[in-house]
Image 1 (tube, rainbow, N blue to C red):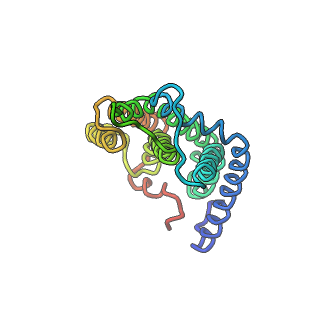
Image 2 (image 1 turned 135 degrees about the horizontal axis):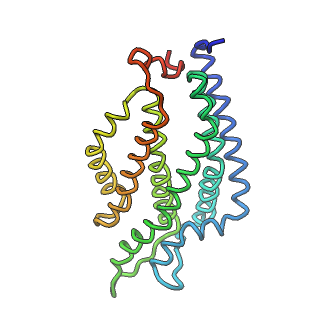
Image 3 (image 1 turned 180 degrees about the horizontal axis):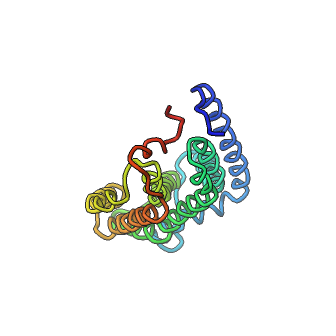
Length: 253
């Protein structure tokens, strides 16, 4: 039996149910991460502390700053820890609008999406963060001493970590654009030169204004884009033009 389009209210009810499951998983992950809040915070901000020098410490200038920064750190760790649940619920929400052969890639989608996010977060933290923080710490002088607050450093690190994790999802986005028939792999490959420009613009916006930092972000994005195009060439079945639009999820009908 073919999947029948559901009314909008049914989609909204299902969406609410799946969002609730994600939030419950996030809450459980946050509660577990709270037990190791200091270790997680120390690991996340290790590149900043190394850039400040030996025996450097961050500052807390508000009475509630330490508590709420640790809470935000636990929330971040809980979110990352529940990524498989998030991707699975997202897939389950759109799956009714896919072909049977497309539904079979559910587990690969969850696994690859989670691994790509973690790889992006690791790359940003281990390779890019030391360069960025060393760049900013280099402006200290004999009459200006860097005294960074834990809230500001954590906020900056979180934004960069999420940016790299999200950016490394690019192959999945490219693959599903081709799977949905929105863009053909051949056309995406031909547009690589334009994406190179976009990648370096993003590198200039998200990183300090030096060529090394920009290249550390733009380079992986270009490689990931090409990987996504290659995966689309290999695994996305060729469809007749009239069938391409019908591959979109029935959610929009």
